[in-house]
Image (tube, rainbow, N blue to C red):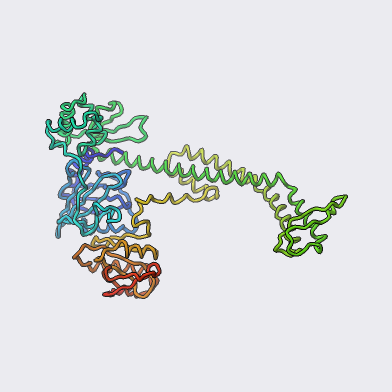
Length: 564
């Protein structure tokens, strides 16, 4: 999906025109990284969509009404607390970056702002107060995730670093000088690497409109495109051709692409809303298709191996007869079998010359038990042959069904078709449930991979909870700061809970109650109607040397009584 700073500028202009002056009526959070803000007045309504999804990070107006989970996530509750009933004052892009700011003014109380950073996997949606402090975020970023820039409730908001230059502030002479420092670099790539807001597609467009790669022509072409940016003189187009897997949207016609694939659209938001939903749907279809084909292949491999084993059983039907014959030989002479022997040589009554035959034994079994064991193995061999004759036609039918399902999956055109096909195969027990997915890479696993859950309190503070004894240890000894608030249900096994605090600040009563409820709900006393929960500062919590995981001692505690 193409969503660069130029596209954000066009979306921001449309959002400003549609949202300014409206009152926030509802806030929805259909998933953990997407926020929808419904705004109304008496005569009009508009809805903004902000997404921090790594693949589809974007901001634009939308007409869709995605539903959220039955219980709104903590961030959604925080947004509703601060935004519902507030008036949208302004919507603007910050500089030439992919950063959007929406300012809100409530009827009473301090103003707030949503800052939407659209930066691939680092995208985020952050709520800040009038003083610029973080109230909450879609992605809370602690020191364990980033040592250079944290996004934590209570801390001042820090904008992302801006290593590139603002092309609007560069004169023609400075532009020529910058180009002279790297004259052999590809012009489009150099523009992208040097100036803020210049994406690869926009860099290619600057070069195309310049007509040459001379610094003077490049600067003039860039200046004219930035003029379109400043004037908000956008002319959205839909990029669509048979060669393109998905349609794309851009806020102005591109001269470096054929005109035949560019189709004018009245608004960037409208076009983006439709194309991204289609791309997400297509991505879901391809993901379901790939997963189902993998499961079908795995099922086919399993059935083929089973078929080969059964054919081998049918290819040697005499095994049961040989075992039964051996059992009869042992039965006839079992008194001659020495105890504890690993083998015995006995005359073969089935041979005309009574030639001796050597039979392997289980030395840990008594002679009679060896006889019984041999007859039991003979019965099992007979049963395997019978079962193989019955099972092989079933396997052939299952293989045929899976092969037919693979063709159907490859030709399916909708997610519903693939889901129904997978459900039918699972009901028939032809495929196993899909794997939960590969483990996250170490750099994507917060808290060292320990099972630590995050919550956001009604006051916007981050609450952390250990889900295992080892996670409790890690949370208390490695994550919590000295002045963070630490909680634990008194006298019973349970989770360690930590409220992340800014130095010199006290935990609000509502946050303490919420953290105490979490500690009570995740303790051995969770079914009690009354649970005392102790809290103290982390610096008063000590882990005895060589103690069991999760075991600590603490002092200076106070108690919150959680009642149901």
